Length: 475
Image 1 (tube, rainbow, N blue to C red):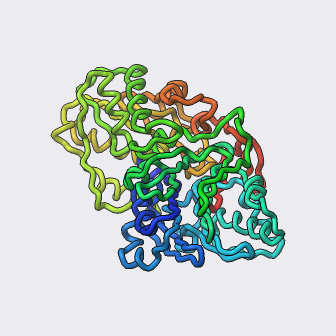
Image 2: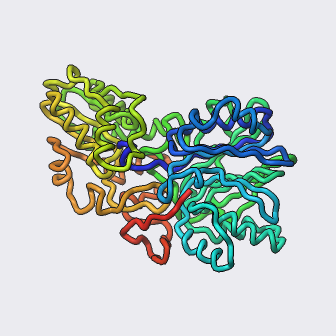
Image 3: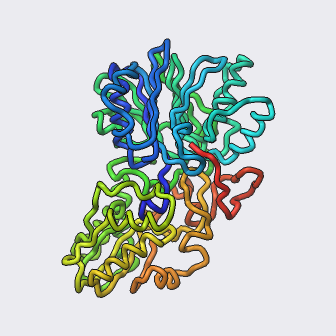
């Protein structure tokens, strides 16, 4: 799937007790740049003061050595963002930072609060003034109210009112706090650097870049507090919910293949999905090629299982710019042409099995397939390593309105005609869930099935799902 079609959510990183905390955090964010390329930010603390720097752009564009030196203090949290809706501007770049009755706090958020609009309205009715259009800010306002009332368990009470998906990192002057929502929609893990500093990250690939040892995942419904006395755990959600919300699309597309999330390696899941896809939909062809970049793992699996050679049909330019933030389809199409170039000699006269991880609107995929056809491919058989996407996501992925999804109100034959391929097969949902080791009941598959694991409240609309994506300002 093209990252022009679905916006990434966000990446979190935090470290407690490292003499180069700002640099370590920059490296942790850089390792998770795939999770958000719109803005980046770091906030640091030494127990007395906080320093913050945020900016629009990639991590290496926002942070220079001099900036890292200026903000360096031993404790830090960082964030890379791609807003799932709301304004794309520096005002909304995270971590957000505030002073309130409880002191100073910085906050970074991955996910979407589906009841943010109602909570914000409540706060505004009480006279509270918001500085951003991000749903994340409402958490701080609610926390400030609890602090004013000297509520020692204020954070747990605030979290109990939140609906939706949230992995959170708080940085207070005296502690770092990591939180995961009770359904566990988004990943969040803990590690330890060789120097003994404790780190938290959305993905384990951020630990790898620091040679940090993986400790464990933050559990769904858990508050982990890291301070001078060590690591402490508190629950605010049920111990063993009957159903979980781990986003299976993390394994399909979002997470880095090197990462282990929800207890298993992403590359292994994707490669297995390709193997199963080859069993479900074999085809007589000459070569298997992936559409870069996320489909490579599945293509490896498909080629290994089918016995067909694995080839390369495209070159990828790393200098063409980030087309997924371009404002209109024409600009995105032109950027795709710059970014992906067909290797004509590799595909001319060949019967191709083209492997994709997923197809969203279909317009970008169609353009790539058309380029292969114009380069002389005689047959194109598209194999998609996930089921058709037909439903909106309210938990941190910016799927467009379902009416704009290519699979909505189309059957597979109609989709194949739209994409211009000789045959098309999607991996079945049962097969996808068979590729992961966890209990299928612990995964959210709502974008494929429409079966949302929790009641969704979007603005004033409440139900199992609303059928349309009412765009919220999000973290």
